[in-house]
Length: 137
Image (cartoon, rainbow, N blue to C red; front, side, top):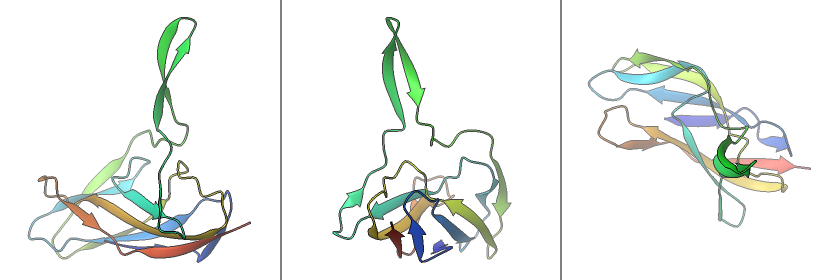
C-alpha cells in the first residue's frame, strides 16, 4: 500500500486527498474498495512536533427531551460501498480523502500514513509510506 497526496500543500479547511495504490503481493485474492464512503483505509496524522492528531469522536450520546440519543459525527463515513477481489500480483489505484474529523486548522507541516486490514482475515494490517503535507492559512 502506498499513498501520494494530490498536492504538497493545502489551505486550512480544504479536503486533503490522496492517490492510494494497493498491490496484492500475496498468493490469493483480497478484497479492495471500488467505490463508496466506507473505505477500510484509516489514517494516522502527526503534527510538526511529532504529536499524533487524533480524530474527533465519531459518535456521541446526547440527552434530548429526557431521552438519550446517539448522534453521529457528520464526517462519519456512511452509506453503501462496493468491493472487488484483487488477484495476486494485481494493483488497484483509487482516490481517498483524509476524513474531516482530523483537526488540521493550524497551519504547518503534518506527516500522514494510511493503514488497512491486510485482506487475509487474520487481523493483520498493512501500512503505507509516510507523506508530508503542508497546511497553509
